[in-house]
Image 1: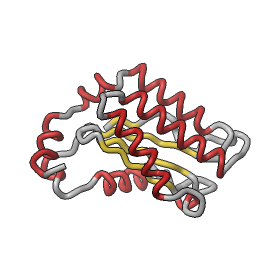
Image 2: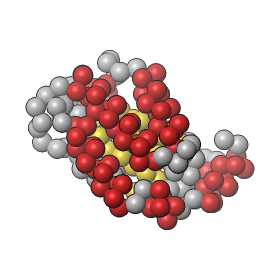
Image 3: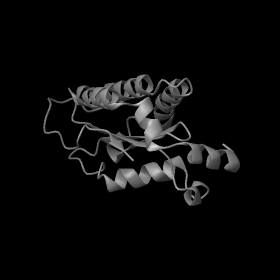
Image 4: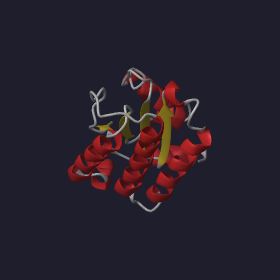
Length: 164
């Protein structure tokens, strides 16, 4: 996305726009989906939806760098089996990033994560935000069960999506 277009996208986006796209009922459904995705594995999923960035930050950050900041800030890396996953949606740009903890390094490739991101972004392009996030959460849950199968243990991370 060109610099001018990125700035315009951020200027036009707001928490109110996110709330219209993902009302309380959608956020509750996403919270339940995260809980379901974690069942049968020791993995943890966090979801952050960020409406926009201050215009001064648009040319200084990337969605990936911001996702890494949230991964650290929310301590997604701080799980017993190092298998936490953050889904980060930058609503203004309709971009999604997945950051997975080091437990996934040997079993899930970057291409697999990119496939999930791309599928979600395809849905976002058609304003299907809840459906796109639900599919992504489900796909991540399947990977967690495949590689970290376990009885449901302690929920180490909150399931409630974070809206900023």
